[in-house]
Length: 309
Image 1 (tube, helix red, strand yellow):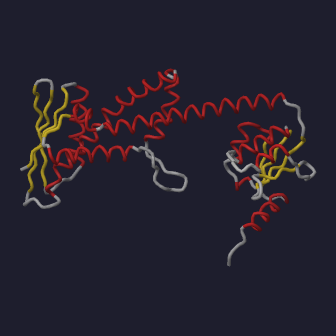
Image 2 (cartoon, rainbow, N blue to C red; image 1 turned 90 degrees about the vertical axis):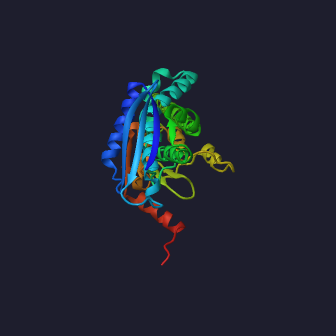
Image 3 (cartoon, rainbow, N blue to C red; image 1 turned 135 degrees about the vertical axis):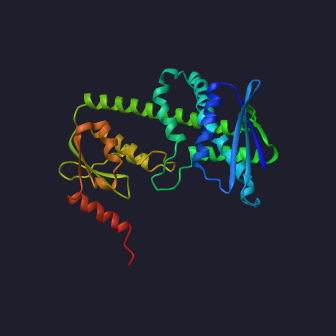
């Protein structure tokens, strides 16, 4: 027979959450041939959950750890369900006060969720951020290792002293979420400024055709098909330390040219460009996929990347 003891503060929310987790785990997890039961006792300021396990046959290398794994998993579930939201609120309050963003917390929450929940990268690889499964696995391992040496665990002490690295990672994740929010906020403010500037600017070109290229970020043409050259912007492209993005170059060029309308060719090859340009130039943008400029652009791309047969 194996025995483990978990001490929970006699606070209704903490106790009830842990009891609910244990009951759900008991119903959901099949531990046969190991049988795990528990009884609940009040002792001073704590509630004791006393777990006992029996094996219907002799314990082996696998079944000997099942009770410890079961208890460790209940602790990990409890930390994520009960303690993390509380700690997250405390961390957020501290960081938001420093940035004077207390009133903007509802807008920041989606950024925190994006970082702290599971998701996949565009290439299908597992996300490297501090996801829920990763966090639970780390807490589980801490609890499992602790229960190897100690058969009794005080959840308050475990959270305070054994999970300091966990809380630091959560702190850094929330800090990153706030940084992402501020970056997006600055970008949207910049877009609004550009939209206003464009709305009061005199039209300089009837139409500008944008064709993605390989020798420069984009080739630009006027309505007659003549190449448009921007010496100042092209000089930037020749710098050795190129810290700009192709999209930044294009937006700068279009703002300088002040077109009445913009045609983005080979639009399917640059899908992210469409919402980005439209966010600034609105209904001035149209897309094209198969005209002469599109075909010429694709031939230029193929010439730099010949097919190998």
